[in-house]
Image 1 (tube, rainbow, N blue to C red):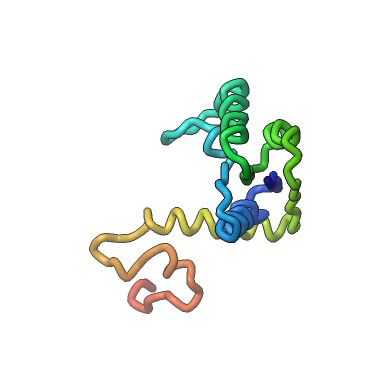
Image 2 (spheres, helix red, strand yellow):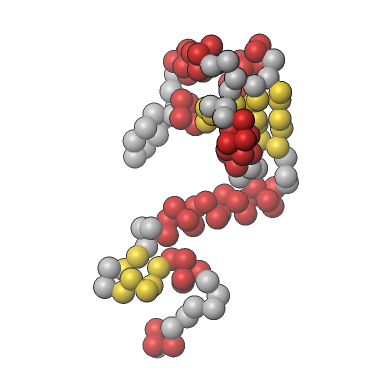
Length: 134
């Protein structure tokens, strides 16, 4: 059992996926139980989250829980998982958060009439069509 905690962009999900793949261990991303689904997420009541977290931990013989919620990680400590704290530094975390934001936004910024122009290409310093300069 593993409990992985760290800031956004610290590599929690990446590490959890690698551990899961090598040992076939199920993962619980705490974001999936801490927030409602929808266009405007709202934090779930803590009692609801605690019940879902405990059900996950009790239903598996081995598991990985990952997230940035100290109060929720504290709950799983009674199962005595290996606690992993990721702290790669502020610059690494901010860079990773920016990469994730750009990747998720890039699908939104494709001009149907000009599919060769996308956010990824605009942000690439080598791409700047001469015809767009007025």
